Image 1 (cartoon, rainbow, N blue to C red):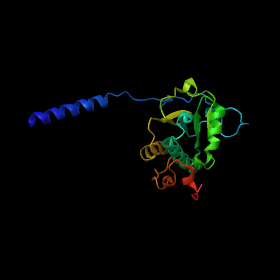
Image 2 (tube, rainbow, N blue to C red):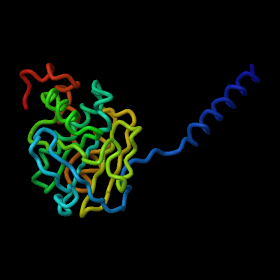
Image 3 (tube, rainbow, N blue to C red):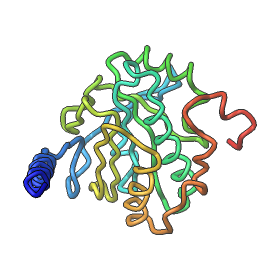
Amino acid sequence: MARHVETMIVMLLIAKCTFAQEPPVYSGPQVGEKLPTLELVDGLDRESQEFDWTAKTDGKPSLLIFIHDLLANKSDEPSLGLSYVLSHYAAERRDAGLTYGVVYLADDVSEMRAFLTKIQRALPKKGTPLMISTDGLEGPGAWGLNRNLRMTVVISQENQVTANFALQQPSVEFDAPRILAKLIETIGGKVPTLAELDFPYYIGRPDTMKGKPQ
């Protein structure tokens, strides 16, 4: 019996060490780095002109949400849900000078725009800027975005990164509070609960929004 317990302890220690040695995942500019140029177009307006997001923010506090390759993962409810919740909060904090938006990464801008138009009712509301990178699926090289992830969230102030989140399995319950906690370190305020974020009304499908506040 004692030998069996010792074996189990050794196996648990080995598993713990293996997990601890997993390399961290990176995507986008890291804390302390300057925001590179980011050329974008409107995600819904075919007549829109390219603009540089970094220049447009003009050093204001910024929350930028990248969703990677939604065209290949059209039922990516976790990413859609988290972007909705974060944007919902950001819209309420524009009084703090916050600039924010969602960037969709895809190789074909026209196809991405057509898909966004199709699922528009499931996208963030309240005037959230919905944008598409003109640099393809990987985005601009200077940003170093990881195409193998589902989402990348970058928080900045004075065009310098204050927080970065590289997400392989986005979760509203787990990720929204910690992302907003970092955002609030930049703009001030109190971390809201999920109920205050209106999360119960969104699970990623347009039909669930019927009759709910927009």
